[in-house]
Length: 217
Image 1 (cartoon, rainbow, N blue to C red):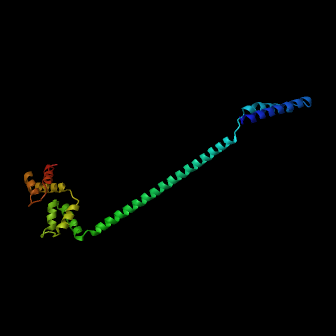
Image 2 (tube, one colour; image 1 turned 90 degrees about the vertical axis):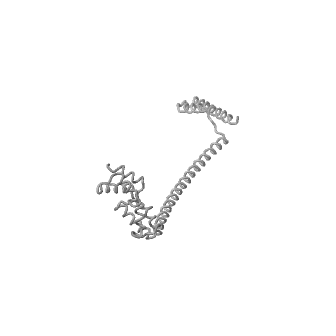
Image 3 (cartoon, rainbow, N blue to C red; image 1 turned 135 degrees about the vertical axis):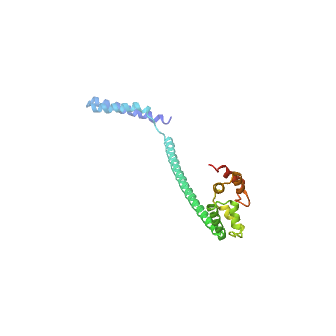
C-alpha cells in the first residue's frame, strides 16, 4: 500500500502541472514548446502508476545479495588459489621424495658393492671366463673354481660367482655337443652321456636334451 501512494501522488502532480502549463500557454503565448512541455508532464503523470518503485527494504536485500555474491566469488578464488598452492607443494614434495629415494638407492647399491669381498669378485670374473671361453656347465665351473687343482676359491665365493654369472647354459651344452660331433664323430647317445657324466661336462639332463635336439639345426 505504501508503494502505491507515491505513484498516485506523482500522477496527480504530473497531470496538474501539465494542466496548468497547457492553460497558461493557451491564454498567453500559445507556444508549441510549452505545449510540448505540458504533454511531457501529461505522459509522465499517466505513466507514474505503472512505474516500479524500489522500497528501502528491497534495496537493502539487493545490496545484501550483491555483497554476498562478491564474498562468495572472493572465497572461491581464494579456495582455488589454496588448492593450486597445495598441488604445487605436493608436486615439490613428490619430486624431493623421488630424488631422495634415488640417492638412497644409489648409496645402498654403492655400499652393497663395497661390502662384496674381493675374493667373490675374483671368483665371478674367473667363472665368467670359463663359461664364455670354454663353454663349461654350471657345475663344471663351480668345481673348477673350488678345486685344489684349479682356482682354489672358497665355496662361498664360488656360489656367489655361479649366482651372478651371465650365461646361457643350454647354448654352452650345444656348443660342446657340436665339438664332440664334429671333432670326435660321436653319436647323439654318446654325446648325451658325455654331456651329463660327472666325469664329463656335467650338464643337466634338460641342457643335454636341448643340445641333442638342436645338433643338426
